[in-house]
Length: 462
Image 1: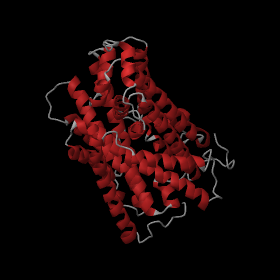
Image 2: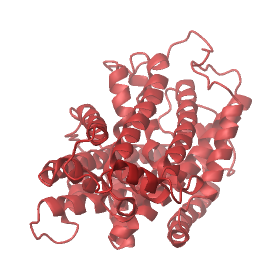
Image 3: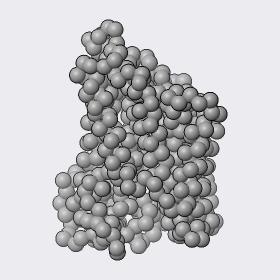
Image 4: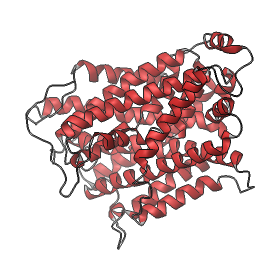
């Protein structure tokens, strides 16, 4: 896939057992196998028809380019404590701050609320206990915030298994539907359903939504110093993880065609539940609710374990408020950063009013913010190649510089055409514009007034 720059090996963290390929693969797909991925592909299929398959392929190609870029940079700077280190070395502190806040803080405000709305809908339907709205959602956030502050990662031993279980669920559900079984296929049959998918198709306007299912694969890169053979396994874990997700979601959406009407796929807040019930019958609701609850809990736990530590690392570099340096007195966890990140989805939930109709614009807004971060990562790759040609690169992006340039152009086009319907445009622009604008102003002021550095003054790799 790439030519090695040297025979030098990537250091393994002292005391680390050495993570193998399977553990890295599970980490690469661990953030991706949440409910919002299932909803995004099914709603995208309903909105765009067969055009969504082309959109999914475009999103996959862009995600693959991003994975290769992160692989090169993380192996080039394996001791980097934060994903912001790449942009910091290439472009300066302001882009580094904006990369983390655009790619990891903003999606916590938009993407996680969509997940919380979904889990509340699914569990409330399966267990109608008459609880106040969003009790399950808020309870999940509070519980996992406390557990992370106490250093108790209840999913540490099972997240690998969970990622594979969700992946198998997608394939099995789609394959069962494609095999012609199922409790409630559409009355018109598969031919009529496929004909409906060929009408009023769309490609470009739905790529941002399709892109959502591939985002977060780079969460594996902070494990570079703990990998047994990072040079061999890290790029493979990300690339094969993306391929596995692409194939599983393709089977999943193909199976849905003959079981859920296209209009219902596009408009239902829980099209994945509709699909499961149509294939396995109403008795599957409870089992699916359990899977959905655990998947959402795993996503929230992963975010609360990873993003606060990014903020802590940035605080140690003087890039954010020193308050984020504060650790738990006995547990050694970044408790202030955890509390801050835990509050973000609750803010997003309140901002959206908990409206199920807000799920689609929330997901697209989160996708757009993440795309901005990925664009900055690709620019950082190019600048690092030019500025530090002598640095050891155990992995190199194949097809450089064509691949990163095409990725930047492609993602720019996707952002410019991110709204699949005119009525969604205002909400998408409002969500992303306000939040990214605030982060940009605060970040610029911080770099100039507190750090007293130039906005685009690069910092030599540490």
